[in-house]
Image (cartoon, rainbow, N blue to C red; front, side, top):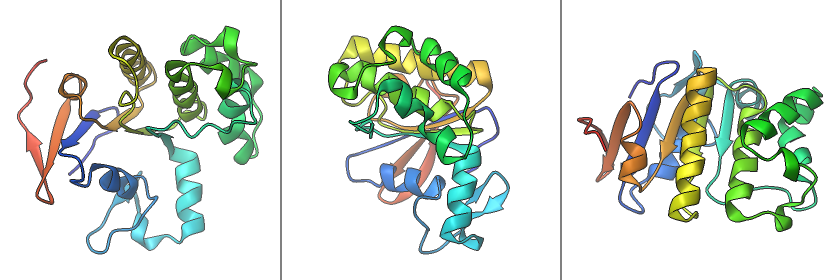
Length: 199
């Protein structure tokens, strides 16, 4: 599997087929037992955990299905976290991405004060704040109702197109998958490229 800069790629397959595991491997969160993964020109198995973490901080955004927002931080503080961890402060950039996801008015709210869709949009803003070259998204609309899921997916593709960020997502939703330029299916442990069929 090869993903070019700026591409959008969907990974589909049955529950338990290994989609989330593959995403974790591609992002360098886990290492493969065999084979090789090259991320932004770096062979991940040649790097120690610290170097992989530094590479992720520079190049990667990740949107988790369960949001992973810190409950004690406001939306604004959650979004700012990747910049702070990288030793950078950029309040203007934080405001910019919150505005891009339509949450300027909710910046000072805590996760418990936000709907599921709003929490997912905060998670997307957090993933984009450091201008990653590649964004991995694990079931980004999986826990959302249809209308909110469409808003979130529209947002992901708008950010992908607007910033040239490569998008790799895992999804059960074939309509979402077919919005991507490339679709891969995991079937019995094998990754197969699908012929693209418009949704």
